[in-house]
Image (cartoon, rainbow, N blue to C red; front, side, top):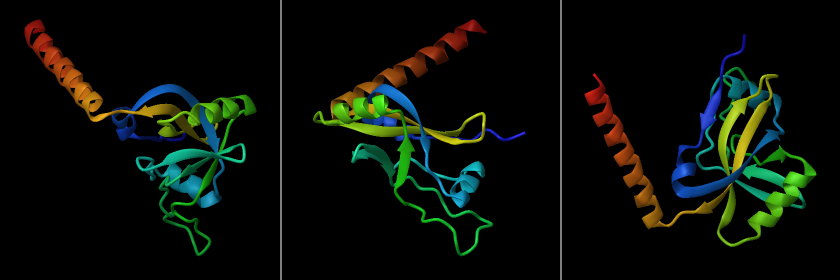
Length: 152
């Protein structure tokens, strides 16, 4: 039985207004997938871009495999994402708009053991949007706390 691996980008929802999301496969080397299966990796600094009709992710940090040898992978190398042509065209046209970017949201292992990256099309939030998000989150937390207190 394989363990559940899920690496999230917690900053994504705070810094961007996320719209459409896609699940993409990743082209990895052998030691990279072994490192991900150990639960190592970070996508908080990662971003995606389109080059020559292909989608790539940059700054996705997958640390070296603990039992690797001299042939271990580069930690921050450029990795290709695998999507349908139709999805790639959609993403490419959306990213041409000003202020729109492709943000990695979640890195996980599929049922078959393949590493998948959930990406979303996001528009950067302004400071007042971020403050508004914090206010709503705080008020919801306060309401839940009060409701829990009076339920008991």
